[in-house]
Length: 308
Image 1 (cartoon, rainbow, N blue to C red):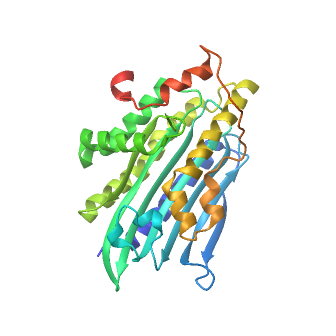
Image 2: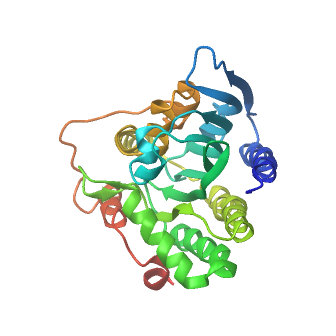
Image 3: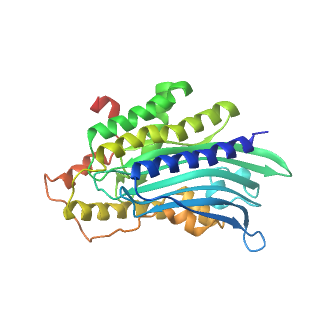
C-alpha cells in the first residue's frame, strides 16, 4: 500500500520551506494563510488544504502556493479520460502547487507542482501515481537564466535515469505547456511528468527531487534579475504576455480542469492567475526589438546543447 501519509508530510514541509525562502528573497511581504475544508454535505469532495498568498511585495506582485489533501467518490472526466478503466473509482489526491508572478518584467514568472494520486474501488487501491514538474515563463529571456534552469533540471534527474529521464520529461513539458491556438510554448520549459508508478520509493524519491530542486533552479534567477531597471514599456509588455498565461491555465491546464470538475475550491484553483493582465488586439512587436526576441524562445529547443 502506498504510504500516502509520508507523502503528505513531505508536501506540507515543502510548502513551509518554499514560503520561507520566497519571503526571504522578497524582503518585504509575507504569505497570508487561508486554511480551508470542504463540507461533504454540500460538496462532491471532502478534505481541505491551506492556500498561502503573498501580495504586493518588493519582488513579487503576487505569489501563491497551495497544499491540498482532497478525496471524492468518483473520478472527474479530466482524470479518467486517459484511464477509462478507472471511471467511477473513488480517489484521494495530495499536492503542492505554486505560481509566482514577479513585479519586475525581467524576472520570469514560474510554476511548479508535485502531487500524489490514488484511486480505490471497494476499499482497495487499484491505481496510484505521482506527477509534477516546474517550468519558467520569461518575458525578456536571458540565456544564462535558461541554461541554469535546465542544468538544475538535469542535475536532479541524475539519480533517476540521468540524461534519458531529463530528455523525456523536458519533452513532455514542451508538449504539455503548448498554446495550440498560438503555436507557441508557454515559456522555456523545464520538467513535466504524470502517471509515474512502479517502485513506490523510487517514484516518491523523484517527486521529492523535483520539489526540492525548484528552489535551486529559481532562487539564483531571482537574485540576478529582481533589481534590473525597467520602464513602462517593459511593464506593459509583461502585462500583455501574462495574458498568454491566463489563456493556457483556463483552456488547457489539466490541474485547473480537474479542480473545477471535481468541485474543488475555486479561489485556490485560480490563485495561479496574475493580479494584473491586459490583452491587445493584433499586437505585433517592433521588428528587431527586445520584445520581438521572445518569439525565438517560445518553441522546443535543446537549451543545454545550444547555450552551453
